[in-house]
Length: 82
Length: 82
Image (tube, rainbow over all chains, first blue to last red):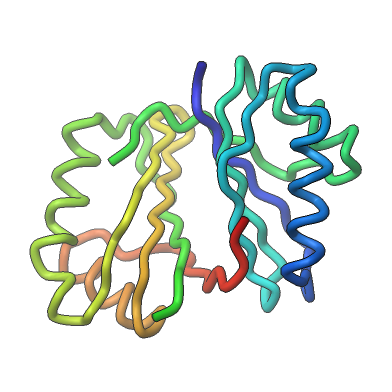
């Protein structure tokens, strides 16, 4: 499995509850694409959300995000970590 | 302490060794600004690097990155996490 960082823009004003709801919507269906969303971080001021996942492909990540109602604007494989 | 995600562009071809060297250069001086760089992820194909930190301010994060030779292109406070 590879790791991916995906980025959502335009989420200005997102709340802790909104982030949890969005994340839970991903978790509810992620197994169908063998995706594992591990962490997410949000900046309500500028509306950026970052999601870290393990997945078979960027397309699998996007399919889950699309079905959950929040397609990512960018998805980057991140094979290097420290 | 707040958490921040910063983003570097233009790092196409970065290697595991290069990422570790850059991260170690941050760690060596981060205490002077009370910054704690926790994790970093890199996509050598598109040249994007993400760094997660705890710090007193975005400016403190940037001062460490600048002194280490790799200023960030974006720094976002990420007060929300799941």
